[in-house]
Image 1 (cartoon, rainbow, N blue to C red):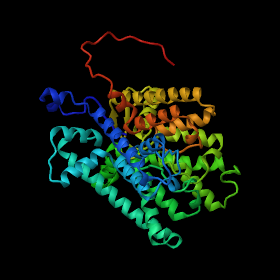
Image 2: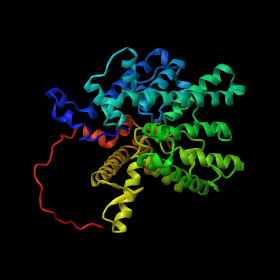
Image 3: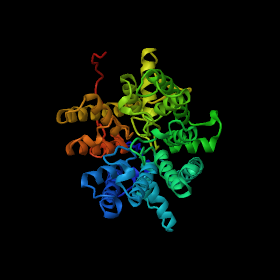
Length: 455
């Protein structure tokens, strides 16, 4: 999800640019960039080389959108409906969509010996969530290098794990596909039951979960860890993301295990080692990974509702994950805690959070809930499906998770179009998407303070 705010540019840019530059709308341009990628992907998937039998326009567009937004919701079986070429198209779209097409554009221009102008640096800084225009190129390089290193290590581990079962070439291809899909939190799989056949395989579970947890931390967090390497020196955001990830994942593991331990459709009939691995996998995957080793439609109501909450929270900013983001969730919790304790300010790690940051977090949450509930009501009106299933699907799409209770292909054309829109909004972020249409205007006057009864 792109993290953008209206005043994120340096003052020299705002005060000293010509009219064309002042008319630049980075959120709109970045959103249009994702749409262009989707159009290109749709065209490639519609070619005869891409599928075993012709795809409809909706099937191709839905698949391309799901790949570009690294969601993982599917209306076709990726492993059987798409050829090697079609699956390769999906992999490329996932990789570009995951690390960001602006990152790819920056590296491509540099490799061609080109230099970045002011507008290109502004767009890249928006996508990479940095105000340092001079450091945009360095951050983009870090993103690509980290992605290649992490994916290369994971690829080799998966290849070694699958080598005896699938042979040299098939295991290599499968390892490459799942590595890209997992690190970018896409959730695309080559079998209709996702990774259920590997729920007892410790190495596969370990590698896949480490991949999507790492991808969900955020590239700014990974860069900070590499540069500082000591907890005391880490940025506040980095410490929040790491600590929140540890707490949420641990709590989710315990709760999912307790919720499903007696469920005969999920954990009850499995050996204890598979129970633990499956509970762990199901606990960490909702934070936008999209894979599953347990049948999602068979989860208990408790697990289903808790999974929806985890999907809504999502991962770190400037990561391959979406949702409202960990930082937003933590800020809202801290704000509530501070108010209940009657503290004058919101603080964490001996640092004070600005009121503007708290309002921004609240805005993200309200926008997310408004978009989610509006689409749940619309789809529930036109589809004869259970509200629980529809709610799960909508939140999965808006959080770009990809988990489903099996209704994606059953949805009508209108509902699938809404899911496509939700995936795009989820990838760029509800607030950034709103900035595409909101006209920025400074408030010229201040008014007397008033009070409204709440609570």
